[in-house]
Structure formats: C-alpha cells, structure tokens
Length: 364
Image 1 (cartoon, rainbow, N blue to C red):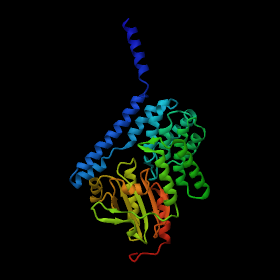
Image 2: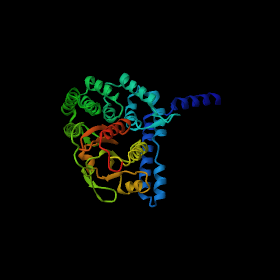
Image 3: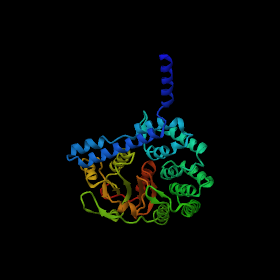
Image 4: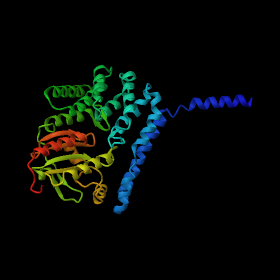
C-alpha cells in the first residue's frame, strides 16, 4: 500500500514538474531580471567614490543567464499562446547579447533560439489575438528578418488593430533599409494602415498614432541626405553643448544609456572608435538619458571617454523621435545624415568612408 501511494505521489510530481514551462515561471524570470537592473541602477546612483562607481559599473547584471532561463521555460511550449508575452520580452532583450569566438569575432548568443522562435510564431501564432506585444517588439528589433514576419501579420491577421500594429512595426523596420522611392512608398502605406486601423492602441504608454507621427517626422527630417536638426543642451558638467559646435567634423551621434542590454558592448566599440580616430576631424557625441550622477560616474573614471549631452528627461531624444535604444546617426561636416541605425560595423564603416573624403585636420 505504501509503495502504491509513493508511486501515485511520484506520478503527480512528475506531471507538475514540466521543466519550468509555465506562465508563472516566465513572469518570475522577467521580474527577477528587472529587479536586478533596478538594484544595479540604485547602486550606481548611491556610489560616491570613483572606485565604488567603477566597481558597480562592472557588476551590471548580464541578461544572458536570464535569457537562458526564459528559453528553458518556454522552448517546449512555443506552440502555446501563453508564450507570446515571454516571446515579446525575449525579442526585446536578446539581440544585443553577443559571444566572442576564438578569433575574437562577436556573434549572437541565441541565433539558433531566435530562428526557432520565429518559426514557431509563423507556424502557430500568425492569427493569435494576443500578438500585439510581439508585433511591437518586432518593430524595434535590430533583426531585419522581423520585417517578413510583420508583413505576413499585417496582411493576414483577422483583427484590424493587430494588423495596424504590425504595419507600424514594418514601417519602423523599413527605416533601416534605405530611402529610395519604393521603400518610402511602402513605409508611407504601412503608416497609413497603422493610423487607420490602430491609432488608439497603446504600446508601453504611447499610442500608435503618436508613434506613426514620429515615423513621419523621421521620414521628413531624419532620413539619409537630410540635414540633421541641431541639438542644444548641456554636458554632464552642466556646460553648454551643441551639435553645431562640431561643424566641419564627421560626427557620430549616439543615443544611448547604461540600461540597454548591450550597454557594455556599445561602450567598448564606441570607445575604440574614439581612440582610433583621435586627431582626425571626427567627434563622437552622445545623448544619454541616465541620471546625471550615473553619467558623471561613467565619465569620471574614463569608462565613457566621449562627450555626452545629459538628457535625463529625454528632451533631446524626443527631438530625434528616438524609440529604440541605442541608435546612431553618422553625419558629415555639414550635418548631412549618411547613416542611421544601430551601433556597429555599418556605422563605423560609414564614418571611416566620410573621414577618407574629409580634408586632413591641422593636427594630422
């Protein structure tokens, strides 16, 4: 009898233990990661000495183990609708997570998992009524393959509001593909659909109508070939600072903060670029929306060696309609835009091409 009871109990436990695959477990992982980031941000604010600030910066929570836990929680259930919320978190969190191979080349940590997730979305969820958060996350994703998925959703989903959010995401993805007439026509058509079908839908507190309006502003003023609007503000020491003060230089304008998942990589590649082009007609100018104390700490110990606008209230970021962080603009000596998109090799190559065409500075 005792043996039978033990077998029944064991069977019950096995049925309840499905590898952590549950909405509650996924929610726990997301909340734990956010709590770790909040704790780190607080520690950065209260650290007083340069030594303490540097130590806290190096202890920034790594999103990779949280992403591994999340994948373990959802990977066996990707055909189930409850995984769409965690999938949206995954799409927002993992793109900047890179690993370095033996030759020093970076590559995405979760490339295979992202392929599996995209296939699951296409196979099981294209018509799900809970797809809006995923559409929003895909719109901000640096993975250009998101465009194909968003296009399918906006064309075939039975709910017009979901179609509209997918259309907005597709318009945002097209921003990174250039500005020829056909791409512009598609972007405008997607934005028109977003406004008509889902203008009142809110994504993280901002309406689709406002996001579409921002995209129209970007098309008009912030696309390749346009003259970038001037920015006027203060640096971390409250000294006046303007974009126009760098007239004649190639400028890499980067909107960033220390909370984005790939912040350490952004700092490393931007610092390397600053060092590589020292004594050339080149300037890196950041727009940072961390607290003033955190920005000062990062600059005081040399972790961040380039000049930054301090923009904790997002006033300057709003002028450039920044929605996805980080984002880079590469400008020539007349502030004409030659590149906009994520930091990395394309931004660096654009800057180097412009420098090759620029007149040597007196210090070279």
